[in-house]
Amino acid sequence: MTNDEIRREAALLFPGGVNSPVRSFRSVGGKPVPIVRGAGAHVFDADGQRYVDYIAAFGPLILGHAHPAVVDAIAAAAAEGTAFGALTPGEVELGRRVMQATGLERVRFVNSGTEATMTAIRLARAATGRAVIVKFDGCYHGHSDGLLVKAGSGVATFGLSDSAGVPAEIAGLTAVLPYNDPGALREWFASHGAETAAVIVEPVAGNMGLVEPSPAFLAALQEAPREHGALLIADEVITGFRLRFGLSNLLPGADLVCLGKIIGGGLPVGAFGGRAELMDQLSPAGPVYQAGTLAGNPLVMAAGVATLDLLSSGAAYTRAEELARHLENGLVAACRRAGVPGAAVRSGSMLTLFFREGAPRDYAEARESDTARFGRFHRAMLERGILLPPSQFETWFVSAAHTEADIDQTVKAAHDALAGEAHL
Ligand code: KE4
Image (cartoon, rainbow, N blue to C red; front, side, top):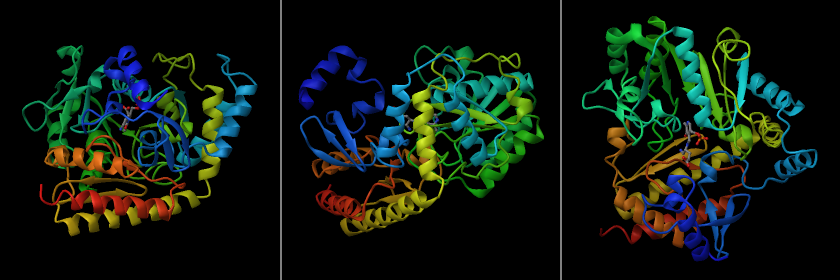
């Protein structure tokens, strides 16, 4: 099938022609690119076009596509059976590695980041006997009802539904505060601390584009909830095992941590963990129910074990970060030469190029970016064989499989793409 044939048939089968909205390319214009194969840092569409890939499946593929050791591990596991609905050695193998690298006393595997954050919130509500959750504008924690909430009119207000189908009664249990605003967080707790079960936060925000936390914000996150008997949930679905071999270490005081993406090596996964006295409130040890037919699936566990074993030496992080720094510098130079306002924000091997002056401190500032320019840039880069995440508000991922040649090709493409932009 060609790109067009796949798109045509997908449009008849799936709402919006995709199985996850961002893949539709609607926010950048143009048509979604059907990918048929990946190898290392490259992916290939159904028409045979090769791209240097910075989507990386939105984070899991820090080792690149189809790493032989990961593919072999999945194949070997599959040959023994794909699912048992029973305890398996693979869960123990991956669980041990996750706990050794993160220091979490207990962990539970689920099938997505959404399930991880949804259940961590349920656990926090049970542990505190409180109902209210705090999240931050621009952070995304998956699509469970209580997290599809947008900021109200004021600075720190109870949320409004951000999706049809989420009743106001549910949205109203989630407060939405500005990211990187320690004052707003402390003010919230001063007036609503007694009813707040937990705060959930991305230690480095990856869903408004990459926005880094200020030290004062990190401090407030670890002080204010604790002062009021609330829990801190660190959503490390992106940052976990991305910035280093383990957690980001930006929120060491978190009571619960959510993981996903990298720990499944590209297969469907989520996980959450924390102190035993908290986690042991989960069924069947305790009264908080959560379950999943394919939780701890042996193929996912095998892919995760192979991935973490390849990451554990730390060499992949050094390599990926070095290449990402090279890309960051090249993008900044390309914007400067073209006279285009641009800010490259990088944390380890993840980065975002914002078409605005200066790195945004929160979602309001990220939204000031020239998204129309990003759409033109995305299409121009695609024409030059570079596949970027199809939104100004997503994060680019560099893998250990990228090469200097890939980065040079990307930087040259950016120069060419922006040169054509300067007059716009
Ligand atoms: P999933 O349910 O998509 O596995 O994970 C939800 C999630 C939770 N927490 C964070 C910090 C996340 O970034 C995500 C999902 N990330 C998006 C892209 N940034 C997934 C891409 C998509 O929705 O197609």
